Image 1 (cartoon, rainbow, N blue to C red):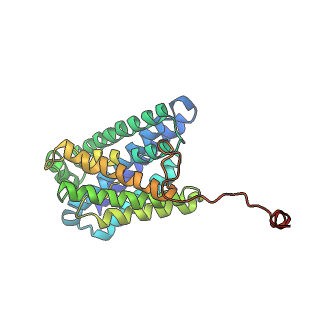
Image 2: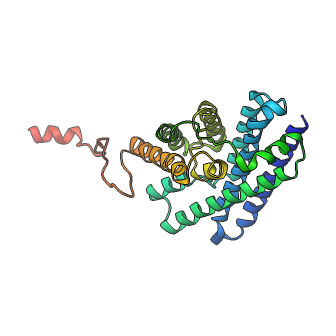
Length: 278
């Protein structure tokens, strides 16, 4: 249990740091993109610790799969609560851009901040492992340079898996975005936990280019381009398909609805029809 307590303490410290940064940034609206940096930092730093429990804790720390799934859900739930308005996912930023809800400059700054935050989250996790506070973290520190890749299938299979998972995620996210946070945040956390656990033997279904960059891009087994095809192009493809299925069009590209016929809102009153017949 000492390993789990150390992990919980680490997650708590990361959450407090990210929440503090977000609180400070609110005073300077011009630097609001830093909220995306803090959101991505928190997500990657915490998910890397969950990944440690998955890879090492289950056999070295006596922590069962139920603990890892619970930790995953708790991290995603806390991220949704603390980071609220920040997306922490480049795919979601590009989605808002394609929906004409975000400008070009703000979208570019947000995506760049998310990748910077992901890299800082990786550095924070590596430093934490180097402290070797428990046996689990000592083993993880030894494995850090040659980590196990999350891509356990071929590139084509991985691309298909990430695309399908991203399609499901974005469709549900689009359906819930107008709902109350009390409903939306827990449901999104449950969905992401389910997708990650289900696709654990394939790609882990990150459906987040910045998150996947921070967790598995530095692992051996595949080239950077192969990782990019699976974990960047896959989620973007799923997001675009979700927009087409949900809206029938992509506002930034197509003004016309490509899939669904739009009914006219105005109808001719019945009285007018009767007068015309007479």
